[in-house]
Image 1: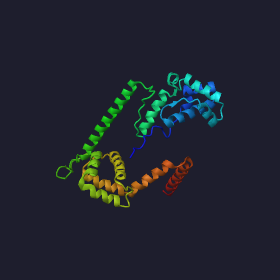
Image 2: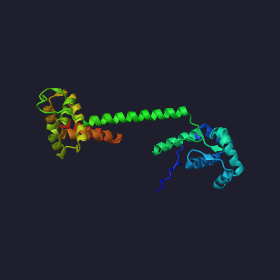
Image 3: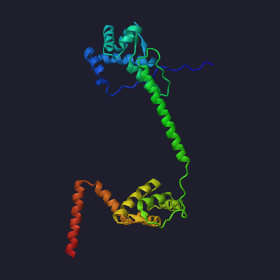
Image 4: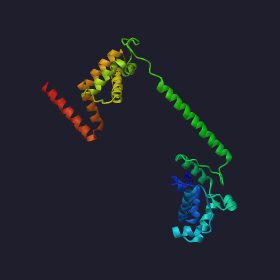
Length: 284
């Protein structure tokens, strides 16, 4: 059974956002008008459809004329202009009657790599052997680096975390609250307490990550309250009380509302607070 024929051409080619600001394209438009871009784009599509070059055919001006509606003589002038301004390589065209360029070949290799296809620019190669060697060496170094990173990651995943048991940790030791939080979330004996917190409908966190986010807020609360150090047990107890404190939730809700209120709403709120204060003073 014959093997599947290897595909050489591309299904698409990307157009850079700075296409029309490229000096070569600007020259093409200036010398041959904006219509010339259509001819150039048609040629690029034909080239990429078959790989990275195309052989000159005397019928090509007629084919493009039929597709675009432009005169054959104009199309021939556009192609000559493309070679004169280096959109196509003139030396290769004069020698081999082939339309290609260094940019086309580099782009062809780049797109093929993205498509996980092996692309070899052998015929009419304009990319220097030095550039190919550098690219090959860079790719090899990249593969080695990726392999090492993957190996390190796999090793790290296989290394079990250090055991955190009551017998190995002095939970009565006063340490910074940040360290307390780290031990609290990693210690096996606190996993049940964390699960119970997540099941409590009065706690707004529903995942461990959300609970950790609230723990960071609690740490800031502790520091502002002058209690930047605690024992792990003390941390767990007060963290739970803080989570369930209705005053804390009301204060956060009020702060959130104030952060999103409009200037008019803010003036109205301050006016109501002043009126309430005046009424309290009048009763006193």
